[in-house]
Image 1 (cartoon, helix red, strand yellow):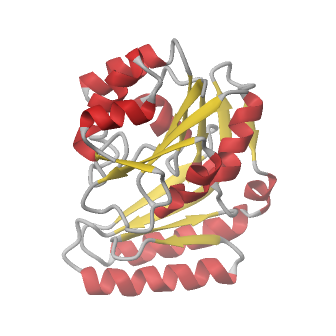
Image 2 (cartoon, rainbow, N blue to C red; image 1 turned 180 degrees about the vertical axis):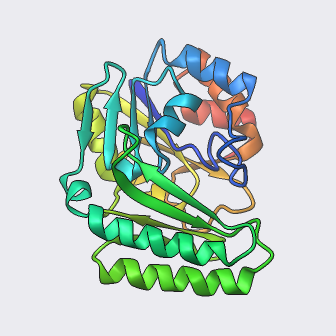
Length: 256
């Protein structure tokens, strides 16, 4: 199988799942390995984070499918935006206002705006209470935000057992994002996809080689064919520079 591309998630895959936006960065080993791989493979990021976050962490990617694929930007600065995002500006703005109002009355809640590359158009938001001491009230607030978002026809993602939710202007589908990246980057060979959550399952199904990253927050319903521990991701990517035989690499690493 000829591997032509490496596509990857960010949170929980390349960076720890509990790191703040401001503190997020690649380790020096990851940065070096991915940079070198980008010279040999088509490298792309598929994430629910926005373009400015993703391109800061992985500036040498060939493309970034951000906000779950609602915006795709290529290295030559070509952008593709899901039309529904523009149609839902009023609705997503109302939900953002509610989320910020609820967060203001609680302890250490983060409301993250998911903006398009223009830094103006709102495509989604995250309501995150992982650092909060008001967990019960935060969960109640999250339910109010979810109800308001659904009432306006927005797409909500809840993650069982995890202290955050995402709201998007339109339905996200990382599998669809992977297919679009194939077309945009003109990829005819196999794609490796790395991810760590149920949101990555559609991309796992589309990729020829799917690798789940396992950590304390990883759900049990990953549909990846292979898995590696979070702390082995650097070893895997470094080994990938020398060989595209993923199964042999995993056997040598003594992982599945």
